[in-house]
Length: 145
Image (tube, rainbow, N blue to C red; front, side, top):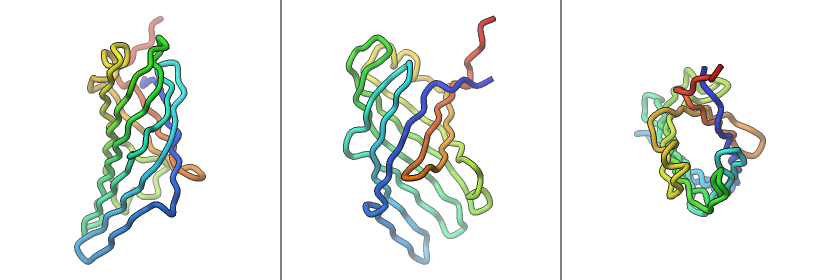
């Protein structure tokens, strides 16, 4: 069973979104802020975070969010955590409760880097009032009996 390890709270100011819509597709650039509080890491998103969504004429949309947290790891050491989250959806699944995505992490924390810089995570992105919630799961976690 997958283990929930972190939940990111993302806040979006709709007045800051930039859209391009044309006959060859569309692009939305969505800047955001946010935070995370977990046993593993607690931090705040630094300026420059953006979710770029590109949709082709067939209705297939690619979401790529890139952002950097500044905070503290589980040992209390100040550090940075970079996140890149990629997902795809079409008009057929736009109404799903959440979007499945694939996160990638880089950190200057030895504790976070040793764990998070592996390909063992998935994310669920779900809309909320004023933003989105991103739940990060460890898919290789095994419950110790």
